[in-house]
Image (tube, rainbow, N blue to C red; front, side, top):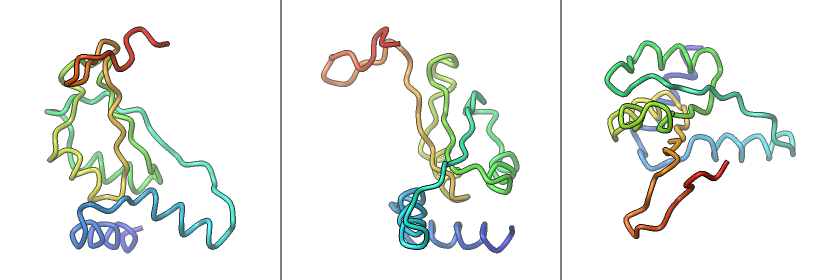
Length: 115
């Protein structure tokens, strides 16, 4: 509902480094002493086509985790800071999926062909 979205946005503005997923899990552990399954969605929308109204609808639908595709979308599926801020503003936890041949700055392979 609208009140929950407003609360998520205000918490993010007060502390941009907060982890909404961890906070929710901790609250649920205290209340129910168990973790319920999290609802997530696989997102293959390129960064230049991501719209705020779509993100708002995901949050209103109850999604909590968004997996951003960087494997099949190449560089267009790799989101920047402003896109992550948009997702976090609505209380969604973004997870960036790397391409198969992604390499770190130390040149070791992160997951080359690991399927």
